[in-house]
Amino acid sequence: MQVSAKLIQLLPLQTGTGRNGQWKKQDIIVETDGQYPKKICISVWGDKINADLLKIGNRLKIDFDVESREFNGRWYTDVKAWKVELDGAPAADDGVPFSGDYNDGGGEEGLPF
Image 1: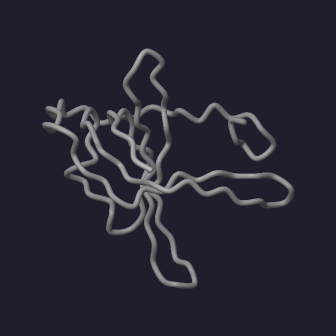
Image 2: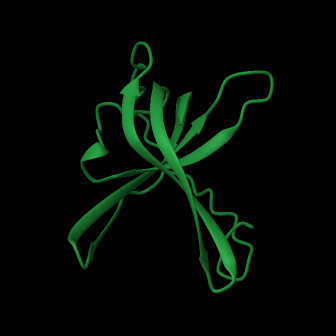
């Protein structure tokens, strides 16, 4: 699948070590155009993370896969990017990094649903 959307938020970079070695993941929040814009959280993994592209305000063209899995009777869905490109001219850098907290809490595991 593919979406063209504006990058509105970068969540903190996550890193770790798994059975296959080191990994890193960058979750991004993009917003689609249209009368009823939608916000989508997309995970960008490993070498697909490009700091030059992932700047607030950039319009991105993102190719992704959607996958759901079950854990302890609950279902979780991931949107994983496999290709990220600029869709138009890059945004001007205002020099102000995002420092807010969008974790609304809720749910038994601290999930917002």
